[in-house]
Image (cartoon, rainbow, N blue to C red; front, top):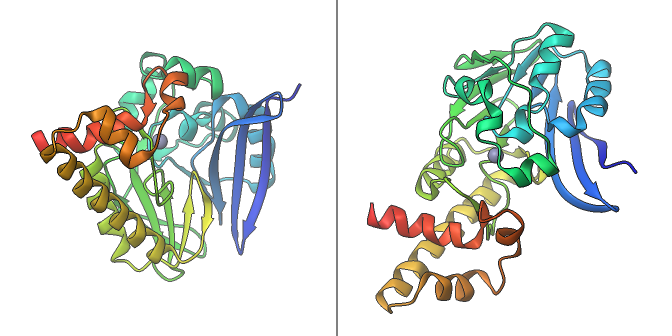
Length: 272
Ligand SMILES: [Zn+2]
């Protein structure tokens, strides 16, 4: 049975490649990579290698950029470098992660996405020029310390990696810095992006409004957690009241991805 499906969505000259990992036809995980004018943004996850490389053949990549080091964004770096002789570019902190992926990719992610082969990256410049477009590279830490977004000012396109994800996030990965995420969202929203290309949600229209709504949601959540603290509520109780009952991803990911992580990220920043 085919465990990986890959589908192409198009928005003008932008090609969005949606890769889904599934089990018994139940989708477990999805991620988008993008291809525009010779530029490939992220390389999907390792389990989708053959299908992803087949897609690449139709696009002829000339420049490859990773938005951050997570295994679902760099999964085929090694194979792209080998096949096309391209050195993927990324934030300077990305390279050390990619030398030893087996040391930090959690077990549940290996099962669902696969573990990337160790690979090299070069340092991305502050701008990327393709034949028809110019992309500004913006440091946007929070989801990870090495996260970057690409912004095309003439078109109003924001390639947001995992910065946005969705407005009302209820789960957080361990190690994410919630206040850095808010700062990074504020950094990109002032650019007035028109369209966002998100690695989780795909193509998002009215990008500026969506980012404003997310900032407001997170600020409000912070206020509610502060209120909960004053009332002496436990983390578990705040989680239940603010994010709803249950935390099934926490169980499946052995606590790597959970509602509790989101509450704790707010509490940690408050105490810090
Ligand atoms: Zn990520």
